[in-house]
Every structure is written in structure tokens, then in C-alpha cells.
Length: 423
Image (cartoon, rainbow, N blue to C red; front, side, top):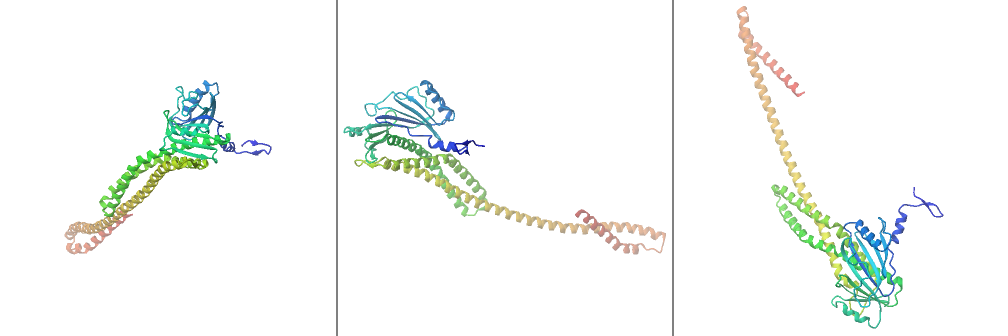
């Protein structure tokens, strides 16, 4: 029985608190003006236990209680800023915001990601966001970015400018510059979270591309193999059916192994790409000076990768259906061939049974004749003995009279024995 809640004392579903709490599980961190934001995302291969060990160590160094075993987020005051950890489905993020260095892309040691930091897994995303106030000298900061991939846009009717080239600096961090001009704290915090999501999820979405590229040659080989098998099936050579079915089974096993390997990754690619698209739409960008916006840049790079993964997934599904249809057709032919063989075998057995029956009748007839012959011979000897005792009895006449009786008696006896065996 669930507990009653509030003044109304209604029974409460045990899932209600979790459902309501999920909305507030990852609130935006309030980011003030002129701040530096660093975020690292790690694939949590070892599960939450490794994250918990890392967070416990960091918490002890700052005199903070470590998070609980089931925690999904944790926060530690660190230097001039705050370290915030969040757990996601297959990765975890370590977010730190602190004082902004004087020079753009200048290294700072105030963050927790120094030599003493032990990553909980493989690094998948690393972002550096600098939030600076817009001034007449801000345009000079463009020289720090690669002009071949430079993205420059404004948001919220010019309240802020976004600049990035999606390239990594010497520390391996993707640099994003936000030139703040009248953004509120809430708007600035939401913007930072969207930018972090875009960089993290677009990287995760791209993880499906290497798998798709590795599966493509195998799919081509399976398609060629299926084509060759279907061409062989057109010849209707019954002797090849079993071999063709074995070949089809091997192709199907190879296909299913690849599909199982990529199932989760391709599904994650679709989900992550949709998140990136939603975050990009929410930015509401306008291009500056003929440069590309973040949305247009990523659309040209991310969309082909997502379409490649989707294409491989569709090829897998289509190949699976075609292999299944070909296998069903071959099995039908093999079953029909087996039925024809069984029919021929039954007909042959029926013919042999009839021959055996005829042979049996013939043997029975010969047996009746042979047995009757020996019985009549015995009767003849007996009749000759009676002839010597009484001259009235003629042995040949008596024998002739008893021959039909003996034959009928032997035939009836054989018939009775056969009926006894049949019953």
C-alpha cells in the first residue's frame, strides 16, 4: 500500500515521486558573466561504481560528503567555481565553471581536472566555453579560430554571439566563445547547457559511423552471395538445394551477428542526433558576416553520418527479409522433394507388399500341394495294408477317394493358420 500524501490523503503511486523528480534531476547551473566552463564526458564502461570512487575521492579532498550509491548528480565547490557531476545512460559528465582567464584559450589550473584527477572511463567529449562581454576588441578573437570551419552567429536578437570552429585546442578541448551582450543569468545558463549538449551528443551520435563503415563491406558481400544463390535457384537443380540452404544459413548468421552488434549503437545515433537537432533549433541562430551558423555547419557534417547509419540499418533489415524469403522457398522445395521421395518410397513399398502377398499365396498353394502329396502317400500305404487284410478294399480306389478330402483338409488348415497370424 502506497503512503498517503498531503491534505487530501490520496494514495500515491510509488512511481510518482520518481517521475516528478526526473524533471528537476538536471537543472541548469546558473552561470554568471565572464566565466569559463569546462565539461568532460566519459563513457562509463565500468558502471557507476568507478564514478562513485572518483567522486568520493574528489569529495574527500574538499571535505564534502560523497554521493549516495543511487545518486544521479553531485556538486562540489571547487576553487572559484563549482564542479558538477551527472550520470546519464551510457556516459557521465563532469562540469566545472570558474573564473575566466585574462587571455582567450589561456590555460588555468583552478579546475579539478589536473594530474590527480582519475577519469572514470574513456573520454568521448571535452568542451571549453568562454563567456566574455562583447566589446569593440571582440572581433580580434576570431583570429584564434580556423577560418575554414568557422561558425559565427547571433542569438536572441543580438543579445549574444556564438563563435567556434569545432576544432580542439592543445588540451584536446572543443573551443566555443560566447560574446555576451545583455543576456540574463537564466538565458545564459540555458545557452551554456544547450551548447554543452550539442557538442556532447553530436560526438555520441557520430560513434555509429565507424560501425556503419565497418559493416558496409560485409553487407556487400552478403548481397553478392544472396544474388549468386538466387541465380543458382533459377536452375532448379535439386541436387544443389541442400548446399544452397547451408550457404543461405551462413549468410543469415553473419548478417544477424552484425545487426546485433550495431542495434544499440544505431538506435543511440538516431536518439542523439534528434537531441542535437532540437538543441540547435532552440538556439534560433542568425548568421554573422556570411559565416556559417552552428546549425548549418553540423547539419552538413552530422546528417550524412546519421543517414549512413540509417542506410546500413535499412540494408540489414531488407537483407534479412530477402534471406528469409529465399530460405523459405528453398525449404519448400526441399520439403516437396522429400514428400515426392516419400510418395515414391510408399508406392515402392506397396508394390513390394503386393508382390510378397502374391508370392505368399503361391507358396501357400505349393505348400498345400506338397503337404497333401505327403498325406496322400501315407494314406496310400495305409490303404494297401487294409487291402491285404480285406480283399474287398481296393487301395487305389480308396486313395483316389481320399485325395480331395486330404487336399481340402490341408487347405482349410493352412487358411486357419494364416488367419491366426493376421489376428
